[in-house]
Each structure stands twice: as structure tokens, then as C-alpha cells.
Length: 112
Image (cartoon, rainbow, N blue to C red):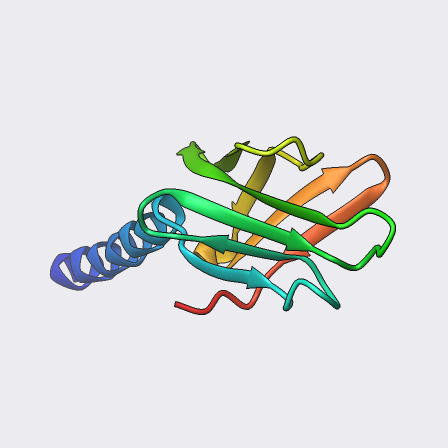
């Protein structure tokens, strides 16, 4: 019985460590294509490209670097574009979400 309990706890811990690895290193493309929905491209070298062309009067294209602090993704832009800088990583690294005033944004469907 103790051996079965140890195997069960060990398997739970292994799933937890895999989820933390995904959260610690999110990478890939989040969101839409940039024209119909915002797109956030996170590269392995800790650079990003954010594209939001949904509002023709205020297009946003920003580049810079990203880092992880806890479960927060911090974007540091090199451009003057107004961009949310803090995103929360959710669903084991498959989604990032942020809030700007009363608007909530969740970018999912990460493609590696």
C-alpha cells in the first residue's frame, strides 16, 4: 500500500515539474494573426514581437525583450508604442492574459 502511495505522489510531482518548465520558458506564437486579433511572438532568445492591427487608427507594432518573474511575463519594449507590460502565464504556458482598464485580453493557441 505504501509503495502504491509513493508511486501516486511521485507521478503527481512529475506532472507538476513539467508544467513549471512550460511556465518558466513560454515561447511561440500567442493570439491571432495580428490583423484580426493581437499576436505576441515570444522567441527563444528572449526577444518578442507584438502586433495589433485591429484598430486602423492606432496600429501597434512593438519589439523588445521578455523575462519571467514568478508566473508573470514582463515585456520591455524598445519602441514607443503603448503596450501592456505585464502578462500572466496560464494553462501551463499555453495562454497569456492581461488587463487594460476594463478590457481583458487572453492570447492562447501557442504554436511551438
